[in-house]
Length: 556
Image (cartoon, rainbow, N blue to C red; front, side, top):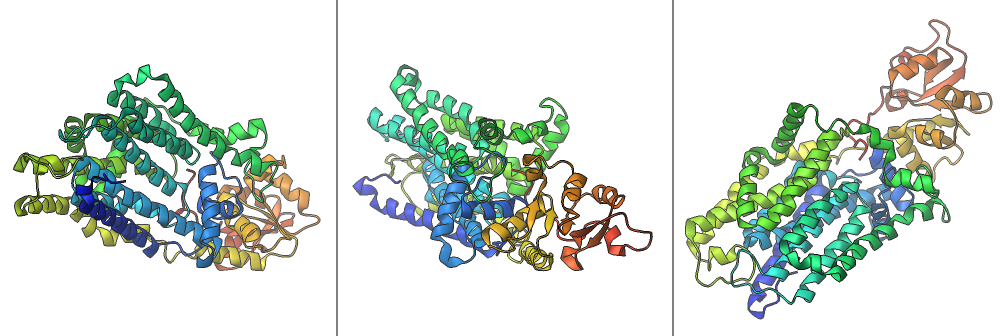
């Protein structure tokens, strides 16, 4: 991880201490605000799918599923499966923040600036938030940091540090091992989140910018392609295997078939969400500006300046990260996901590394270049050997970068806080306790997932049948009223609808009575025939009043 020059032993220890320390702080911050148990929506889906190694909604997230299954086994002593999957997110954010320390250190030559960059990204609201509950974006963050770190290691090994004239490149064949490792991690990452695919063009540009002779090395190109493709294919095998031969307790769509596999893998369910890529630019720019301000606070206006400085000081890194940020932000602007802020984790990470380079460059410009740098890597060669004045300057630059995040900790901690969120667990327990024997519950996604968790993972109420809009489609059960008519004569039927219009239409044919007061009042017992005027309880006319999934994630 750190250069092994015997004369550099103290810096090795310091770098490890800095990275591990920041990782533990980030992990602790996430634990502080961690959801204690079950959630709603996709959170509950992942809490249910990972422990049983099932198949998740498109794009399947097989890398996350496999890692989550392993974590649910290793972390078994700490509590129920839902909590273990939540803790996994905290671990992944801690890992990513710790590795960011060394990434920034290698870019700037300053461990102090590396530590500040790691703390800054850990305190960025979108990153902090994904570390508080089950979410594959936590793994995406960790893998993205690892990919960037490996690519920077490769450039330094291949060319020597571009900012340190005393750094000598390694043997070409030895150096290229870092590039192959980056390809492996990229392949694994594509099995977690399709945002990784947006890294393809930037990485290709970066590789040929760092080593133009690569185009004359077909064996290296083939090795990198194989290194990315093989793990990408292998992790994807989790979908057909668990959906078919080793039938998992929960399978989304049916990826054991050829058409079902591509339906899930390509996310065909969400293709219609993409909007006009050339339309409504003022709104899209305004959204990006708002998100940047929300995540970076007063540092947001400095990001463009930091990029320009990075382009001058580290042109190849700027090419890699600038094109990645541009492509990602463009895609995000045309894909109106309900929780789109999470898709800006990559640009936020990149912005923090640019800001670190800006700070290092300002210090270098103020104090000049020393004759004999102490380390091989980064701007340390330009900052010169340590003295009190330079040390104070670096510390001052670090303080300027991190103070806005530290000052805003109370507000940010409140915005990401899930530590008192027991709503999903309480709602599931109340419903499971109250439902009649052999009931059929016709639900929708946000409430289906905690019910599935209770039945599949917690082993409760095996007698009830949970029919979601998803498996209603997969089983060709027809429209909502057709499903009700299929069971109402022989079994107790309940419906959970979020749309008041659905309830209005149902009341034209059936009598709806809420399951109970409080949270479970959004669950309705269905009786044949419409209610007579004045015979339906008032609460049955008000629509769902139970917990909502507004605080939970929308479709990734």
